[in-house]
Image (tube, rainbow, N blue to C red; front, side):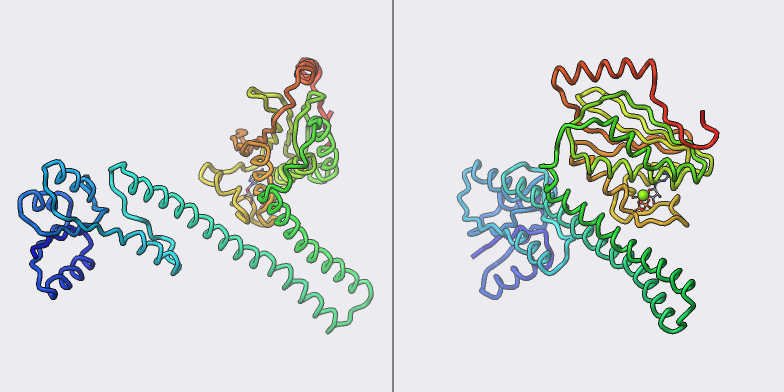
Length: 378
Ligand SMILES: Nc1ncnc2c1ncn2[C@@H]1O[C@H](COP(=O)(O)OP(=O)(O)OP(=O)(O)O)[C@@H](O)[C@H]1O
Ligand SMILES: [Mg+2]
């Protein structure tokens, strides 16, 4: 028989041609759709063996369409081995493989594009899981190694009670670090699994912010930082109070950590368009470079500012997960100088709550609540 093979993959072409020739057939080969179309239309073949996915504008289906329209009834065998090949490669751990696609929008090509999109997501997820596992191992190793050497030293040196108690305090701090990492990871897992959605209630954001600011007042005072709160009262929102409080604490904690001595930190609560309320935490520290803004919400990522400061890089990941649970994303802006991080949550949109909140806004404009806690503040 005289057979035409239309196939762009060199290895597959050699294999098929060899098999056909050994079986006594004459074969012509086209390595792309254009040549395949030309040969199929101009030569009398008994059979055409054709790859479905060909690079460029003319794929297997386009060739068939043209031949059928021209009245050619040559039997055509279609090769769609590439899907199997790709899946096999992925099963063997090569997540970089993708299905070949072309410009047509027929069903198989659309399916191949969708599968490629899925593969992209899987690759990113697996990459993320690998990174997080490495980071957990790394970040747990440090406090555990410190704890071990403290205990070893205590056992070997048997110091006087005062020195021994100091070491024990250090050991407790090491264990606390490990527990904090696990707590943050468990909370993130809970949010990811959607387990916290049932915790949504109506709450007053201004009240929540005032409590957080009050809690951090002593820490601000130690660093001579002026911590202010601007909040109209009340601003009713719908959300998980424990998680919003945790996210806000993480943002204030960062501001305190990265703002300079005698710095300024402000927490502002306000209503904004689209039925949302926002909590903005601003500081006058080093800020975050634009190129780092997407990375700082990744688990365990620590940026330039963190050098020499304690932490593991989970604070913003948790705040971002909380924002997502409430239908938004953390927003990072330049506070010139410093950083302004905004967390948006949905307002309670009942008429009464809306009217109350607007009244609250108006009152706040006249007399902004300003909690000053640092020495020297008025
Ligand atoms: N207010 C800020 N000013 C400057 N850089 C910041 C600020 N907040 C966060 N960053 C940068 O973003 C990184 C990630 O912040 P994140 O809160 O997730 O981790 P962390 O503060 O390093 O550790 P922890 O897990 O204890 O919160 C920080 O390491 C820091 O480089
Ligand atoms: Mg932090």
